[in-house]
Amino acid sequence: MSAIILMLLGLGGLALGFVFYSRFIAEKIYQLDPDFRTPAHEFEDGVDYVPTNKVVLWGHHFTSVAGAAPIVGPAVAVIWGWGPAFLWVVIGTIFFAGVHDFGAIWASTRNKAKSMGALTGDVVSARARSIFMIVIFLVLLMVNAVFAVVISNLLIAYPSAVLAVWGTIVVASIIGVVIYQQYTSLPLVTVVGVLSLYLMVGMGPVVPIELPEMVGPLSNSATWILILFAYAFIASMLPVWVLLQPRDYINGIQLFVGLGVMYSAVLIASPTIVAPMVNPDVPSGTPSLIPLLFVTIACGAISGFHGLVASGTTSKQLDRETDARFVGYFGSVGEGTLALAAIIAATAGFATLGEWEAVYASFGAGGVEAFVAGGASIISQGWGMSEEVAATLLAVMACLFAGTTMDTGIRLQRYIFQEWGEIYNQAWMKRSLPATSLAVGACLLLAFGAGGAEGAGGMLIWPLFGTTNQLLAGLTLLVITVILIQKRRPIVYTLVPLIFLLVMTIFALLVQLRTFFEAGDWFLFFVDILVLIAAILVALECSSTLRHHYQAMRSQSR
Picture 1: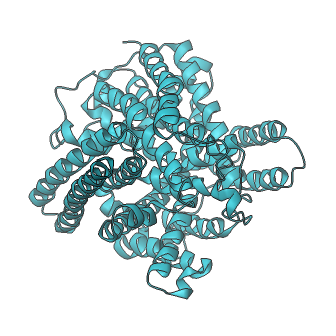
Picture 2: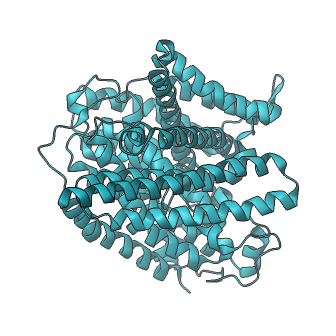
Picture 3: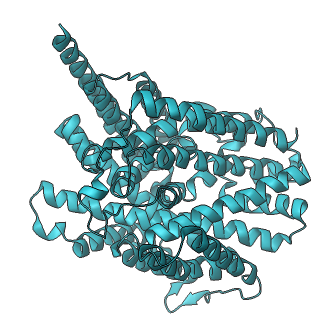
């Protein structure tokens, strides 16, 4: 089968979802008000609350939620065949992720830009808030610790990408000042910024940058991880307009340029998908397709982490409430297009089925490496670009997304500690410096405390990221659903995804529990039990809360 067919079907479905379904949700369900005064204006402080052009804010939101996950998940899940991965990405983006991300921005904006954790306490219960805060902390800990490892590995594997990855920070800082001070127009700045980025991508293979294998007592991987956390510490403390917004915006533009190069190469080269539509002969040890597909592909279909970004940073920068549709739903569509590209690269970027099977010899294989290698092969065939330059382009794309997610993740973790300071009346914890220090310290403790000198401790609990993340998405949908009930609006469009996620998450946790028990992995076994307990409590809380609000609504209508 030609990859062109898969590409056209996927992109066509996502486009129709944005044009029609998101408009229906905006007008009939969330009922956006162009005159509503958003928290960005109400609490404007020039640091976190900054009214922002919707295109720039879309860039921040999209690149913050994208990270490496919409590449890793789909490029791993194709081991079951490209069919299930494709369907979940397209259907999940249209009916799950778009409604979830869009709704999280809307709900937070309507409630003074409160985070989902704080909102849970207001609209559900104090018990649910406690569960939510713990799950949020676990997800952020996993994301920050693991993405540091992912970026570190990419920088070591592709030294030609180092110049562009770090050079983008300088370019973004200059753009931030230029835009914020209104020295020139956004289109001109965009062109100059993107051209600067791609100039560095082209120079990368000429001036590769590598660290020595050992930097004192540390390996080059551990050194990169420390550098990344030092950068994230500083970046998360800066006003959003200095680095967060412009870097995310430029990254968003370069992603669409990169995807344009990738998809146009598919049209030119017309590569054949060598992987099976449904794989009847998965490697030994591969878990069942259902329910693991729905937690293996989280970002790219629906992800609880998106709700944290939507209510943590995006809602504080929303200029007009009507911008939420473009920023939230179209941000999800952007991530869906990245996940679709990952599926095509990981299934059509190989010469033969045997070559594909050699890469996917065990569950968990593929991932970013399959995306970069497969995508570089397709781009090279289509555009005649050297595979080294094409691989550099895709490696830079993956690094920049993972980096922006780390920036936002550390900032969100700082917000969590500050919220705990509010809850437990600890004035010192409310301040930015101590809260950020605690956020970075917790990540480093996991990275090096659990992972030793290599700093790869986050990988220990990464197998539970998918289930924990989808549990978080369920909690976010619960908050949105309760708010809709209070406003007497239809809830089926959020309730169906909520129920589906909770069922699949609990099912997946039970499957993984058996796997960890049989493997004798007692650490993950007991962590799985804790997450399973949280999932059951969330399911009970959902049932109780929805029943209570529904009965209250019926009583008022009599």
